[in-house]
Length: 196
Image (cartoon, rainbow, N blue to C red; front, side, top):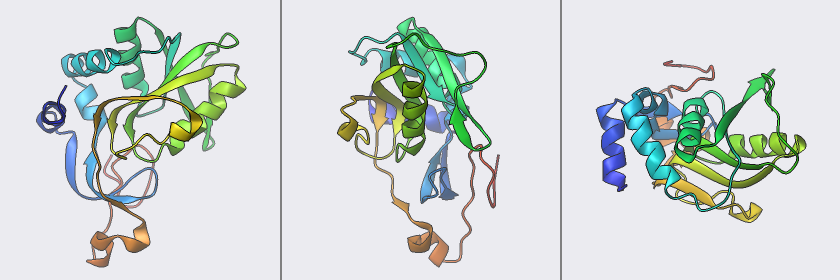
């Protein structure tokens, strides 16, 4: 799928926001991708997941995504690959595996994110999964906004529906803040000026 086609799905569903945003990584940006909106439409989610699944060229037993953002995405990718889908979640601000989810020793996992920026949350998930005996064999994203593979040094391939590079800034270097703007945090974690 071409980048323009993917962005058309985002625009048509209202999932591409423009303004002044604080990302879950703490970085600021002038664009925000609210994947929950594009994935809330089953037909769009299915098309995007099938495109993603067609790229996966490693053997996996299970798909895992971090809550909240990647719960629906991991389910859709799992469906497209014919594999079970699980999710990790935060408890007391610590990423963990709950709800009776478990792995067989050495079970091969495809770790997916909805939007990938720094890979920080995914690295937390990798630690959790490996502590549970799973083996992460690849990572993936609906939208990789970093413009690179942040897992390359771990030797993990990265599959993605679209890769784009979106400007981000540390808050103290953010030109939007310098102009007097206040960042809005539209994601699921609480923060100043939160939308959702």
